[in-house]
Amino acid sequence: MYLIGIPLLIIPFAIYNIVAFLFNVGFDGVLFTIPMPSGVDLNVTTSDLLLILSIVLLFVEILKATRMGARAIVDHMLSLVLFVVVLAEFLMLPKAATSTFLLLLVICFVDVMAGFSVSIRTAQRDIGFDPESMRS
Image: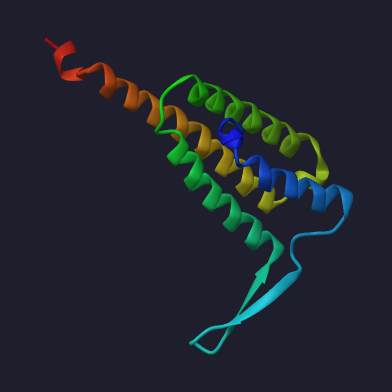
């Protein structure tokens, strides 16, 4: 599988940029409505779908973080680069100063932190590191 080294969160980031910059539309348009048993209608917007996609991809990224090897390290580094790019865009471009983009930024941050945390924890287990033995 060739896409394993590429951070999957680049997909919602690219979708956001395509919609915001190329099509010049917002994310508050209602795509469809779901009638709820309570009698109210749930309006699902473009922003909602993009964030749902991002959360699902975050789950996949966390699963990818559990593997070891050079490819995993490259994946973590690329996730960090993606986070820096998303952060820079959020701070510098007016069209990125939205709550949707802020949540994408937070999801990218969680991806970076979870990836490194899982990798460090897995490496400790693999080499038999025991923090209690260090206290003696």
